[in-house]
Image 1 (cartoon, rainbow, N blue to C red):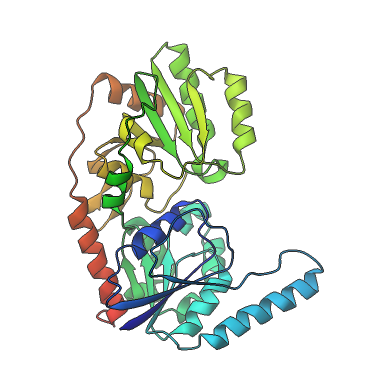
Image 2: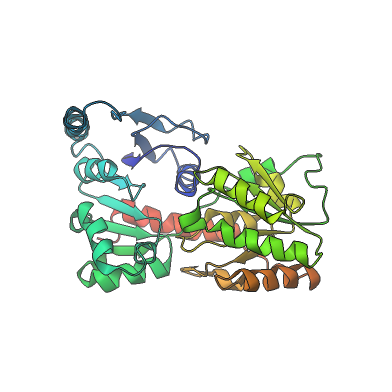
Amino acid sequence: MKKILFTSYNLGIGGIEKSLVNLLSEFDYNKYQIDLILQDKDVFYNIDKNVNIKYYKVIKSGNIIVRKIINRLKIMLTCILNYHKYDTSICYATYDIPSSIITRYASKNNILWVHSDYLLLYKNDINKTKNFFNKLKINKFKHIVFVSDEAKNNFTKIYPNLKEKTIVINNLINYKEIEEKTKTKEKLYNKKNNLVYIGRLEEESKCLSRLFKTMKMIKENNKDIHLWLIGDGPDKNKYEQIIEEYDIKNYVTMLGKKNNPYPYIKQSDAIILVSNYEGFPVVYLEALTLNKNIITTIDVTSGSLHIKDYAQICKKDSEDIYNNIISCFEKKLEVKKFNISEYNKENVKKIEDIIGGKND
């Protein structure tokens, strides 16, 4: 039985956390022993009962010098206790330096999972992008996994010497759980045409202000379309103020966090995403599973999956988003069928290959 370690920050609400939970649900626990080391005990998602979770909570307050010393000692101790203990170790939270350190020491077959296109995240600033990856000691990882072809290609432009270490493996989706959780007799929407956004309420990457501007245009043109937002985040209050300012309360509803968002997707007409940058959003896969239209500013590919084949791709512009929304509802666009089962199998095989060392 192979021993696999995953490291991450926490299991709080978010795309990375949800994709990790989905991935762990796909493992054959007769073949693998899975440990998960987390830095924080914030848990929003239920995880497979076969996963052994460990914590090493860091100190976040007090004297800065004392805090740094104690936290470094905690990380060092965790590294010592897990030194080469595993066949494979995977840092799943790209941004978390302590997770990357523990992963590098836990096995020789160590893997960094990259969830975003960091060149776009840093607005095409190569120096900032290199500084981010250099802090993670990127050269010391045996494999580097990306969730989209675009993220991998931008990375290899900066690190051509690491191209042989890179591979694209998209996020997995627990489609059986999704289908089960959509079962409800409750009618969730009282409007005719319903858009749903699922994700963090955060402006820098998600840029929901441009979507609210679009909803203002929908109001001004007397279109019967409603936007429902599921999630929470640091800019919630800011967004409430924008909704108030645009006087679109009858067109936009904030639903907050939902442990089970799938009935909302099932009963909607389309999901919408207007981000500045993403990796490969999990919500795309959820929408494809439930055969829903996708309206988005993020055009990404991952292996055989080209999202433009299943979505309406918009410019990062409120007017173009408006036109695509109107087109979706007035033309009643048909959703192209997607084989989610075959998609999962394809990505599970890639994961098993790097865990088994076939890409050495």
